[in-house]
Length: 438
Ligand SMILES: NC(=O)c1ccc[n+]([C@@H]2O[C@H](COP(=O)([O-])OP(=O)(O)OC[C@H]3O[C@@H](n4cnc5c(N)ncnc54)[C@H](O)[C@@H]3O)[C@@H](O)[C@H]2O)c1
Ligand SMILES: N[C@H](CO)Cc1c[nH]c[nH+]1
Ligand SMILES: [Zn+2]
Picture 1 (cartoon, protein in one colour):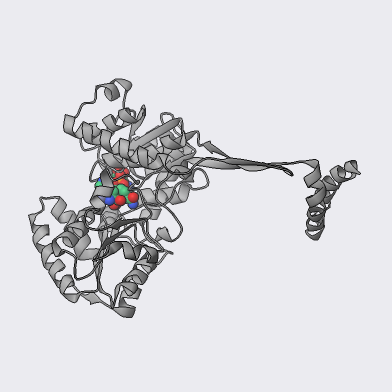
Picture 2 (cartoon, rainbow, N blue to C red):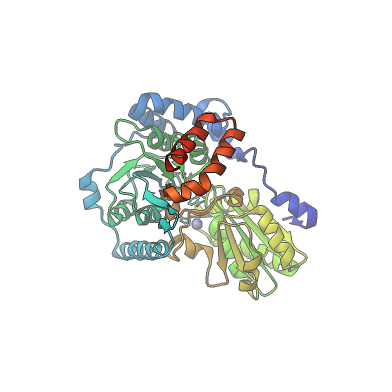
């Protein structure tokens, strides 16, 4: 694989925000499904328009066309109550819920009201009323993603959460997703995925209630649908196909670096990036990836191979300062620091969804039980977006409660600004109270 350096590396790691790259395999599948090479955006526009008008019928038709079956949309209360899984998996789900909850309970998320001599000013914080959580399930049933999206919403105080996730080939949702929902106290779970699920949450259908905000990651169809429904509903961010940038120096273990890159490469459409100050390490990691890839079972091997062959980037940096500069330019979802002194690099990190510091903090651990939500901004959106967190599920209401004495002090300046804007009624509204005080 080509080793990039300097300007070539900078160019390869710069993002083009005007268009989301569409893999050839997606266009080929669209040709099969729709008889023409529609872009995902064209497909999503059709789906959104159809679900808006035809509701549940459109959900079922699109699921039939894309996923190959017509599911019963709602998981019944009986099915939620009866879902059973292996006790070890059940315990792991409980541990993940506990650790993610503990993490978000530490996030400052309260309002404030400052009562001073001039009256009161402040910010009220209120939870959203109803939130939709999308749980990806096209290739892998992402049980953990339900936990990592719903827990911050629950900590924020959201009283109603609606979950949608694509069912598997039998038209069923993985029982562990149902058990996780039950553990979280969520009773509304729907068997529908892709853009049609996002449309249902945004517009509402006969079965699926319209929500205030849609959260959760997904493939290109999900990401584009969230982008297009924004405004009709809120969205937390645009977490799409995952990406991991590893910064490694000559002290790093090639085995660990390869393992961390492959762990994320096995997500569909993932982009693995390795930046190292050691040419020798780059060579060793490539050899390791080859060996570890062959040892993976199918279909994971094919998914990972596609990410490695189609999107992996390998960069030789002159020093760790340049490595960080390239990482900040790329703004990765995950930044993994596998260097001699990883904590010393933290001060130079400007843009990333999450930073994984040192050998024991591999990103795969963060996917499950470390604590912070694994739902993080991708595609370079870490420049302006954050991982899912409590604030995503709250609104802030500003409070103005100044008293008459304060009004007398600051009112005249407001009338000056109002008249400078040509807004006479504004100025008179203020003056009407000022004159009463004379
Ligand atoms: N950034 C994050 O925080 C984060 C977290 C978890 C997962 N992810 C990403 O989520 C993604 C999950 O993808 P997935 O595909 O496995 O599951 P998914 O649930 O996101 O998408 C599957 C659905 O996409 C729709 N779809 C697929 N092909 C289509 C087509 N040609 N036309 C119309 N609709 C189509 C179908 O309805 C299908 O049910 C991965 O890329 C993974 O990296 C990201
Ligand atoms: N690494 C993915 C994107 O952050 C999330 C995930 C869920 N399950 C396993 N991994
Ligand atoms: Zn993962």
